[in-house]
Image 1 (tube, helix red, strand yellow):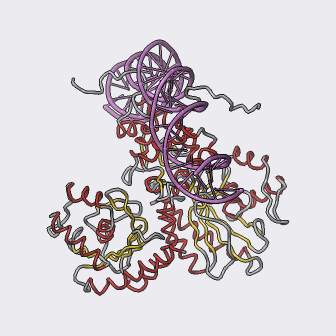
Image 2 (cartoon, chains in turn blue, cyan, yellow, green):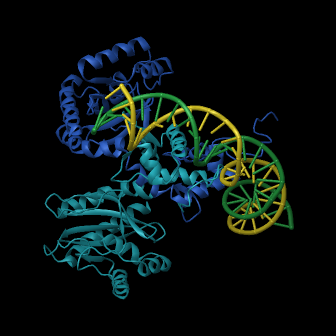
Image 3 (cartoon, protein in one colour):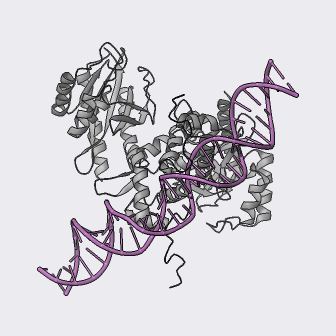
Length: 255
Length: 255
DNA sequence: CGTGACCCTTCCATTTTCTGGAAAGGCGCT
DNA sequence: AGCGCCTTTCCAGAAAATGGAAGGGTCACG
């Protein structure tokens, strides 16, 4: 009855581009193909509006329709995404070093950057005989949980740090640190030590060690981490390897 | 003087979304970072319009600005692109098989799909001791030149085949086949043999052998190829390997 | 230190694109 | 036939999008 959407006005009700991007937001890892109705529902747009916008997006190649008429993210969009300097660009130069680290340790190697108040995983090499981790390339995670996240948060602007520490903090295991004061101390440690340790923050059987990658101007632009089974080795022993790898990538980025 | 753009009308002059996508089109492999003016010029849009559209795109994360204020493709767009079923999705399931092929042959391995009348390269593994090839992941190429292209064209709809054969045909080396009749015969061979051979069509020192990958409904959805130095081996000998790899990937796609 | 040639950003009267309810056309199921 | 669900097209009305102009910034040159 008191649905605020009942009887919408006739004319434009918001920025067009924003609404088109809302539609694209309806896609995620669990929903790679969607019907028109699904898209409209998930983006909270009228059916006819969604239909028209999707036609425009489809004409360009941002979305495609499969044989059953279902919508999916278009190849053109993937091509464009491949041009992002911070994602694929970084990935390309870092990959050889990540592979070296993977070869030496036989553990999980991860490469990530910060986007707002979250981590985005750019590359991930699975260690065959190591712990299973739940991250996905292109996936997001909280900055407070992971090894890479702690590194990126420790070197983020004060504003971002406050946003994260004052906001709600994700909780995954009994070991997850959610106390802002304690997190602050951990971040200070990361800055002084040059590496981070995230012990059983995500799952009770895993532990990760992260180190910062710096760009041309000395800013921290990304982070590497090694994810190992809890108790298999001493994390501080791994820190040297991870830092060396991160520094090698930093040097490669300068050139 | 007779510039048709002199004295544009004041109100909207075209679909908004289309213009935003024009802006994104301004990015390519050679132009990963651009100034506002560059973007406006390349997209043929007024400066103020480009500025406003880029603000909207930036608010969502489709574009970002680096420290110097230059625009670049945003990480959000890369994340979205990672959800394209035909690009990264295909890539993920095919990768292990491609690596096997690469290990066995030590040559260049390529995975590609068709987009309209062009090939788009989805993955590429460089053979360390093999010929240097000029393809790039996310890059486009003519359907008539490469091994993968011939496979994809041979199994495309009649309409697409006519479009390509009647249109202008790219010419790279003295060996490049540009005669439609001869191309038609080559395509027929590809269909009967189950593999394609592109001998010195792109560079005079390379040769590629391609095979089709089929999806659940039997349609050809992608192609693999091996790129080797011309004269190093007999192409027909490689065909078996490439076809076996393609069939393994096809089976993996069914499941 | 003035001048010119670039950039980037904001403003606002003008205008036409965008909007979304309604209606109609599938398709599969009961 | 009837129902539920999906998609597609249509069109009068409304406000979002437009781009010229103006203001400000930086750098290089004479």
